[in-house]
Image 1 (spheres, one colour):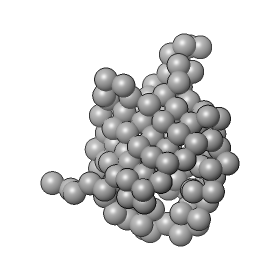
Image 2 (spheres, one colour):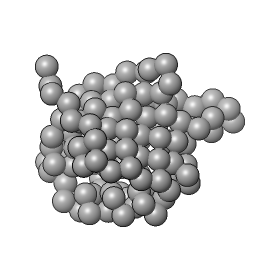
Image 3 (cartoon, one colour):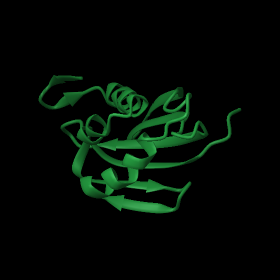
Image 4 (cartoon, one colour):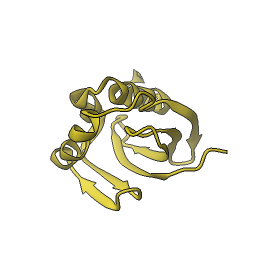
Length: 117
């Protein structure tokens, strides 16, 4: 993932995030986030901050994954991070945006429903 102390591949971090979600691996998913990371979900109208809140949000979802959960539909670099269209834990289309710390940890995610073309 990292090529030097100040360089990282944001696309690889998102792929690692999807892999952790698909595997239902809460610890691996949380390890990708900065300790002070924030998360906004328009689907459920929640705003969270910090590892404990992220753990409480993701734990039940990773325990009941659909067959298509965390499948990637599209991924692009943006001016401030990465945007990915994927299947939620329920198998519904979602668009998620990631911003990162300089060290390559996820600093902020925001997601919402997305209609496939």
